[in-house]
Image (cartoon, rainbow, N blue to C red):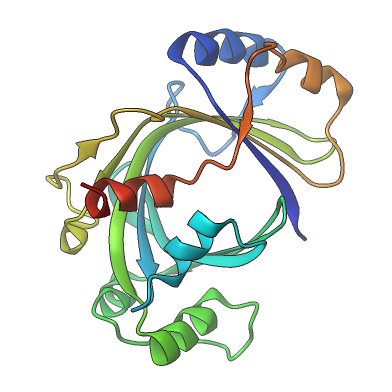
Length: 226
């Protein structure tokens, strides 16, 4: 199912106010083991033409992003994901892979797949064979997530967005990052068919604007734009 995904750039003050509001009515994501949230590290891939980056810059309505994601600097759980965007809606195909499979993909090699286009491994393999898909940038940040059952609503507060072009160091604890000078905080609101009115009102600050924020684009541009 495609889900709505709305993003908002926030100041630290706005993030604090909104998080205090949300905490009063929503429960934290049950996958969190720390009350402060968790860290996310993603290795993004692109083809030889940088099609994913260019389509994001151009605002193409139908586009895909390819990434490997881990949490809290641990390789215990490694997620292979293909995120498809259609207008303002998002479809994410995700599966767990092994460290060995991760390393093969990082070298530009294909891994086992089911031959189904619902399998992100199949989509990765196709992109490797047809476009030369390769690792391009590491994106990391801290996340605090809240959920609400009706509408399958998920609200996340992401802070300290940072980048590394040391893609070969993905998954290592000593990887070095460059912090974004601006736009390093973002609120994301995701839901299926509807979001309750009380949540819309809860997230209203008056001057906060929805944005086509892309962590991948910002972190790539940190190294491609002088």
